[in-house]
Amino acid sequence: MTQEPVPWAGGEKLDQRVSHEDRERVAEVLRVAAGDGRLSLEELEERLESCFGARTYGDLAPLVADLPGQTSVTPAEAVRTKDVVRVRRVGASLRYEGPWVAPRRLEAEVRGGNVVLDFSTATVRGAVTHVDVELRGGNLRLIVPDGYSVDADEIDIRGGSVRHRHAQDRPQGIPITHQIVITGKLTGGNVVIQPPRPPRRPGLLRRMFGSGK
Figure 1 (cartoon, rainbow, N blue to C red):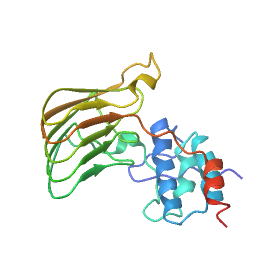
Figure 2: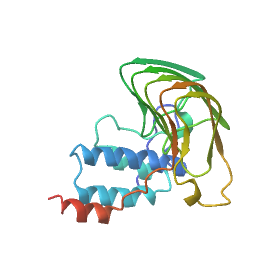
Figure 3: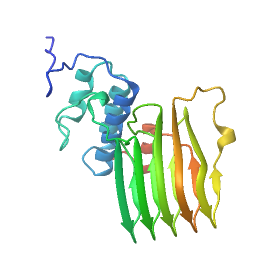
């Protein structure tokens, strides 16, 4: 019996094709659910296999339908991107991780904390994301996937440095699809640019934590 495609808000159909970005967003939701104890390791393994083999939104939707706050799957293009986001933290750190929507320009003032911007599964728009920081007493760490470049030449650093970790180990010849431009002032800290950690295979998780039963 063939199941009819299920519409989501906006009148679109779940028989449309998904992108790599859509699969990664759903995979991150599944990993978080497993970490919260909502899925066993066996369920995580099965759903991740189905997730990365999904062709349409209708394939992805059942994988998260029974998880809180995940009753529908929408394409990444439907998520609205803000032009400017301004954030201020005093005595606390600022972290953007997981599936988040990066604004075209992020202005952050942080004192007494660190800033972590993980673009591994972030949704970005356009060719450039501008990050302007005023950071005192902390580090700025950027995690960027292949195809991303970081321009930190114009940031004013006092008492710190810019470090590219394992840049020589990254694949050569990959075209640049997105650029992150860093400006502003950093006092008493470093800018650290690094690639994402390699994804854990479900089989490895099972060997590390047992059967999950």
